[in-house]
Amino acid sequence: MKCVVDGNSKPSASSSPAPRRRFLALASVALAAPMLALARRSQASAAQPRALAFDHTHTGERLSITYALGDHYFPGALQALNRFLRDFRTGATHAIDPRLLDQLHLLRQVTRSTAPFQVISAYRSPATNQMLRNRSRGIASQSLHLQGQAIDIRLADVALGELRDAALSLRAGGVGYYRGPDFVHLDTGRVRRW
Image (cartoon, rainbow, N blue to C red):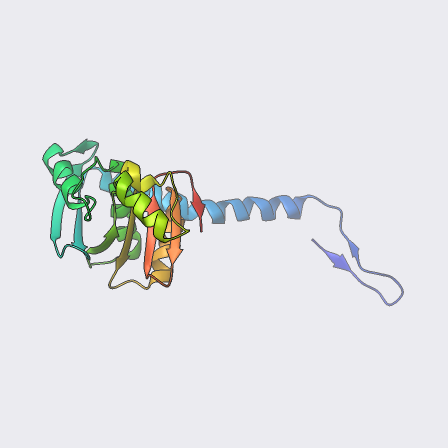
């Protein structure tokens, strides 16, 4: 927008819509560029094996596993992940949403992390969720942890705020930032943040 000022008048804005349209077009391209780059990277890696590595902070277990290739998920790998990401308090298992695994895979790519994900919590049984609700006001009664659609994690080589920002940039689901307990929550629900 062009602004004209002389000694006797107030600033006046040019009424031409062309500069504004040009600005909006450039802003749209600038905002879309990161998403397009991520989509291209996702397409390029679609034919590549997708692998994850985890350290469970409560059980001491470790798992490094290739779980998918392209559109094909390996059933044995998914079963191993369901067991690893079980409710560590009760031992109950549940199918983990493959979209959550893909979200974690993309998150490692975006952050360029070489560290395994440190798992604080993944699947939660109804009994565990109720016990946590009785102890704390911040636990949702219909938590996506109950459906195998949520995980609480951190990466040793990525600052927590950076991990949160990278997760938000994916726009793949909910992202919770817990500075005190030192973890980031990810889920495959609607895109939101807290």
